[in-house]
Image (tube, rainbow, N blue to C red; front, side):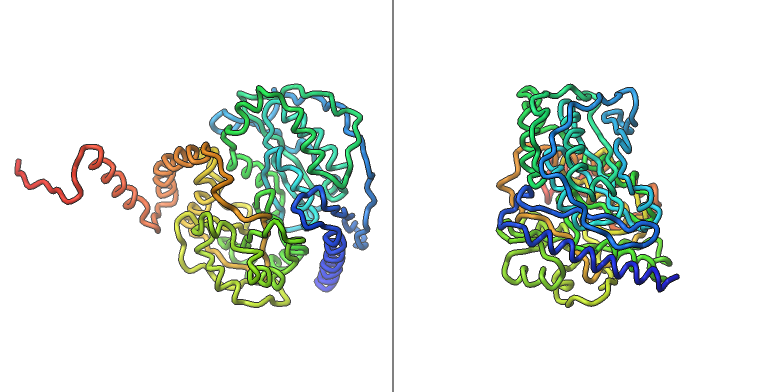
Length: 455
């Protein structure tokens, strides 16, 4: 039985690589996803047959307006601010894949980034759980775009479960019917999405851009939607290497992994230059791109502490090996560490009080650290993110959201310490010192001033 499983996985690894290489060879030098014609694939059935390329329609028409979502249904979040409609759409092979596979990919996105699912689904053949944030008029537009993606890309229609999320104060609203019947080219998902977004009203655009994006709520929805024992929770624009999911299936079945319930396996993330012809297929290619300054560690220039605990210089010094495994253990946790990782699904939830940008992913990792999780770097696996990050492209309202979330951290840290009866980072003592400093400043007490008066 083990031999049969090994042969099947090996065949899947080979066929997935060939499909990805053939699809990548059509890529242009531009990053635009609309210029990448990514082939969809079938999945092996119960008989274990090889996957086959599935032809897709060249120019489907956009479907008529979808049926209105029943706002009396759905699940409210803890703070009664957002409503989630879980499993609004479920892939044809979702249940079967969730039973056969050990790891599910869960990702969150807003409507304007939903086209990036095409590239993500081109490298991941297991179950995927995707939560989509779509307030007001964007929700019916999201429904139409999901219909387009599912008709154009067999992999998306087979393996992805979608969950729709919107604010209670901005429930679904009817969208324009101007696009009904227009030809929607399957090779241009970005262009199709742009056409849909262009139909949004000016009144929506006035508040939509700076509306706090509930990242952690969406991550929880995507993670909760996963039905496997292990989860991997990247963002929609973080693309795993081809066959990584199948290599993970073999790795997670090993005794060392099965015996470690409190282990998280870190998948390094790298930024890839926009002018690169394609994403790297393996670690050898990635390291070559790093050497040519076409790739660099995620947030290296913007927020280096993001992956500092991973010590990726050490990881880069290790050559690619034939088999996926652990490279080394993270020896020192540094506050605000934000690794992507594969772990058992019972890891702590993402705290939903952090809405908008700042203190979202790293607070969940901090709780894992307090709870006693150990982080291990995987030797060959990594994810790629198109484009070098910079502050220039960030709007001013993001800084305001960051400040608001920073102010929420004190309460969160105290709750986490009480929950686990541990404070290994000595966070509470640091918070006391910070608060005392703020009090002294507020009351005009100078740094070196001491009180020598006796009562």
